[in-house]
Structure formats: structure tokens, C-alpha cells
Length: 117
Image (tube, rainbow, N blue to C red; front, side, top):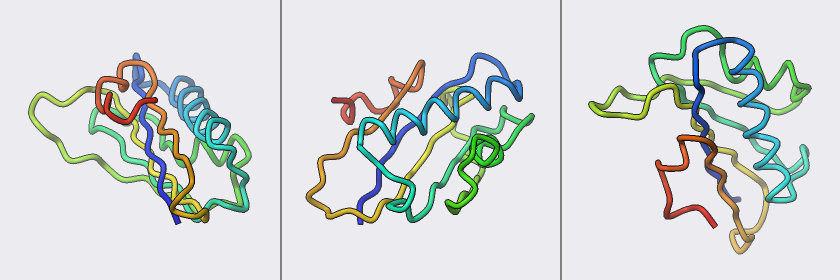
């Protein structure tokens, strides 16, 4: 099994932007890594404490990902942390030798420049 990481940053805490950017992030992860739904073990999300209007797992379910286990958690609050960030960890049933492409969008790209390819 392998895990693929990613994150995105919202401009504002709205349901519509959460829906749009969560789906964009997961779609990019799937496309860049050639993932199929049946390879996904689960998808975990964390959100910063300033995101209160919508759950990223609910946003993804609404986009049709009803058969994949999804879970959301609150990111620990750290002084100076980037605001309005959604992080994702996708666990995939693929060999550890698989070439992984992590995805960091918008302002979240500054979180892990070492993982960007």
C-alpha cells in the first residue's frame, strides 16, 4: 500500500468553494496518479480550525465518491500556520514501488515544496 498527500487553500470559508476545491484536489490526485476508485482504501481529510461551513468528506460524497470510506478531522492549531487549508491523505492499494505524485494547490503549495514534482 502507498499513501498520497495533498492540500489546497481556500480563499474564503464558503460551502461552494469547499465543494469546488476539494473535488479539484481529489480529481488532480486521481488523474496525476492514474488512480481508480477500487484501488482506494480510504481518504482522510484535515481542515484548519477556521473552516467551519462544510465538511470536505461531505463535499466529496456529493461529487459521487459514495463508495470510498471518507473521514475528516480538525488539524492541530499551530502558531503561524497557513489559514483555510484542507489536507488530504489517500491510502491506495498499489505496490510501494509505485511512482507517487503528491498534489499541493494554490497557497498550500508552500507547505511541502519538497514533495512537488
